[in-house]
Amino acid sequence: MAVLHAWRTARVTPLGELHTPPRITAVLLRLTVQVVLVASLWHGLYANTGTTAGLDVDQAVTYAVLAVLASRLRELDQYAGRDTVLQHMHFGTIVYWYLRPLPPQRYHALRALGEQLYGFVWALAGYGVCLAAGVVQPPVSAAVAGVFALSLVLGQLVLYFVMLVLDQLCFWTVRNNAAMLILIFAQNLLSGVYAPLWFFPDWFLTMSGFLPFQATLSVPLSLYIGRIPLSDAGGQLAIQAVWVVLLALFTRFLWRRAARRVISQGG
Amino acid sequence: MSGSIEVRGLSRTFHTTVRRPGLLGAVRSLVNPERVAKEAVRDISFEVAAGELLALLGPNGAGKSTTIKMLTGILTPSAGEARVAGVVPYEERERNARNIGAVFGQRTQLWWDLPVRESFAILRDIYEVPKAEHAARLKEFDELLDLSSFWDTRVRHLSLGQRVRSDLAAALLHDPPVVFLDEPTIGMDVVVKEQVREFLRYQVTERGRTVLLTTHDMTEVERLAERVVLINHGRLVLDGSLDEIRRSFGSTWQVRATLADAHADVTALPGIAVLRRDGPQVVFGPDGSEAPTVHQALKAVIERYEVTGVAIDEADLEDVMRAAYVQAGPVAEPVAEGA
Image (cartoon, rainbow over all chains, first blue to last red; front, side):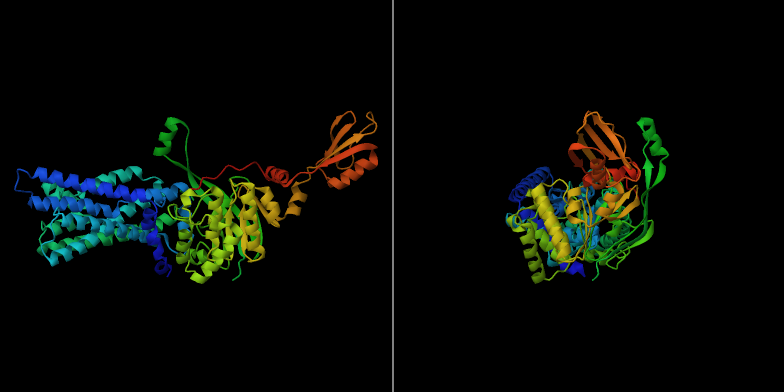
């Protein structure tokens, strides 16, 4: 099983980042600025308000700051490492993915795992600093923390598969820039990165319920701040799990179809 | 493991959409696309013995790369079959992957952001090569390709020659019996080219690897290949030694003679035509029928005429290949690969 021995592929992103100190500095600066601005914004919005959309100021600020940190989990500039499907299709190097005893889908998954673990270290460090500084509130109980952790993992899996569909699109269209722009906007809006979904009208929440985006971030963060009570956690986790299974099956199907397209696009 | 390659009646047809010219044409193509079938490779058969280096030659778009892609398992043929080291490559991709190494021109398989040595380590894990074996092979490749002078440099900062040498090493680190090289020295300077040729020669003669090489560099062919397969328009035109190719397509010699008598009558000799005459200077060449060799022609000219000076021009391999491409048909249009 080459996949067991190929763990080193998971190190590609962290190693690439560590070999490029300016990128680390840029991440640090960006995170700091984003956290400070987001915290200030939500404190300002709540200056004359007690509770709105079911959230008080502490919950809103905690949600917004955690959203900034969580978006760090998979937001790396993989483009710089020339290891995106888009770039491999463009340069014709995608053929090498099909010339190794490690199947492309496993390679892609291992790369993403390494990237997410690296991002997790950043997010965890940021969380520790924000918690110590009193910017975010701790979870109200160990049970909430546990459910949040499980929901976050499921959410990241959903996000991985959504991003994977975009990558796989390149096998048919070569470029996915337009689709990526749409997805980034949709993801940020519908997952609650820009603002918690609780501030949106009911019709928006209903529509959002049929899409996978809120399962990526809104659900785990709402569990963390207590906007979704523990009693409702089971249902939400089940919905996330269903999205994981559906997207896993869909992307598995696309990988099979993509293998027939390797040559036609840049092989 | 035997590293032989067997190809029997291999064909590949691509279906592409015709792009009509102009704005209206583009709209029509969008609304009512016209699909056409193009045969990139047609009924090709050849064999490469284990430990042999074969040059697969042909003009651009002849079907060389498509053939290599079928043999590496990336592409499934429309008809025919192939076996590489006993494996049908397009049916058992992963098993085939362990038996082959490949370099596709300037397309690198190394990780852009990492030092070369990290890329090698990743490949070691992917191919499950034992550490000691990996280290020994890396040492051997370093001696041949001088890798250690740059293997701690990130790939993005390597020169083309350094990158191609690294890619060659990367393709062979798992000790594959069969190696596919699609224009590996394209764009490289002469010194690095020679280093790469030495490396390939060593891999064939000392390590017994089977190498299938495509190149447009005829010096490379002369120095490395004993046998060539020539394809054009997707069809096999010739399978033989360089001497056979020269015999078939290379009779483009010229004999330049300076006659003692500037006004002597000069007529054609059997198989030899008078190409030009300027006073005592006469240029003889093959008349296209049963042309003699250049040495036979030289002998015939000297015996027939009194000459004060003589010189011969023989076609080099590049001229021979040009003649072969032209005689085998017009230079092919590249076939757009569409599934």
